Image: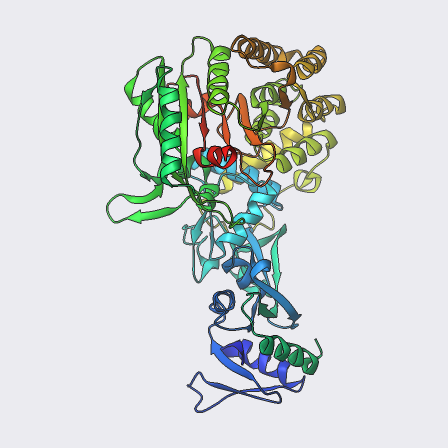
Length: 229
Length: 355
């Protein structure tokens, strides 16, 4: 049996169902609408597991599910050495969102990471603490800023309404997911020219654990044939 | 194994080796307050150290090294000169390589002695080399102080020098800055605007409009400054590209000092160090020196830097590392600075090479 993890609600679930449906594999919730049980038609031996998109990376890495649909940003954020623990089978073409760094529009002197770094140095000298960047993507943002050589900043955790942290003066800049940039603009923020950390989209992943049975490996091949990926 | 009985026995042997030179044996708590390290290293420490929180004491860190607590202890004791040794576990997160230990024993030797820095550098290096005696290791050395002196000696503005010095330990940004200072003409649109804040929107957040205006003035001053001459940037590149035996490097630096007299004192320090090393029996004629060595470590070494690497085990982390960290004592000493140099050995790796 091959376990396929799919986000349990919302547009991500519906789009995933559509994506599989268009390729001849019907995924559906079984039982009532509130129940997180699912069924698969069109191929035998594949079991649908509905769970939170944020838990899918961990469950894939642990081997509790074999395949999973989730945002490529979540896999990179939640799994160290993600590409040794899961592999991309298909980019699904929806759920697109960019993880970006944004600063207040009033910072007319800051358009690039180079500017951000210089502003951070001056900010720290003046205020006595490091310039705060609010995010929930700690690993991705830290690795990005380290590679880019930005200093004198600190990350502060923000699990929601991140765009509001600057106005509330709990952060000076943010790193967050955006699809249209509308919420950012409405909150007086702008994206840095070179501030794209990761362009995310819904992706079908497989776990890379070595303990798969031959039957599971054959089942994956059969599923890939049906899906045409 | 990083914490096996054999490792602890080896750790004690090395600590005794250091103590026999007159070093005082010291200890440090496993749980350290996190604020000092966070202030020194920022987010990098979160990637490398285990942080945890205590309901009363706030954020704590499992000690990632002994240097910071030993410096703090020394700065409070006001002893001078002083030599310390210690042996104990340190804890490091391994974000990318699962095969590397996340807790292992370090045995260290730290010298706080401003009388003769060249001699103190040589003392630490030679003692660590003696501790590794007979093992198949090669030494790599460098000197961050020469690079810093070269940056200070550039014929350009103080603001540019400060920015370059701030990024000595971030090679990519350092290189980008050098390139930008050499090319001139940046941010022309912003600087030409009658009112740069015309489309700025509302002022939000803690960074005030006055701070933005101050940065624009800094950009304006930078745009007015002459571009950094290509020959000057080339001298920095030449220093960074040095990779030869120490005597050859010394000769090459002598040539560079003709065009850049500001590195003269730092080069003299290197020469004095090599003499002190030779006096302690180190074969300096074959000692490797790399101009950019030590630039990717956590930013506290600011002079002599060294590491010992297993010749046949390229998969091993360095068996021993060390260097001079005068600036760290100034940061932690509340205005008081003490010249300091030290190094650590990993006894588990020593054993891995001996068997």
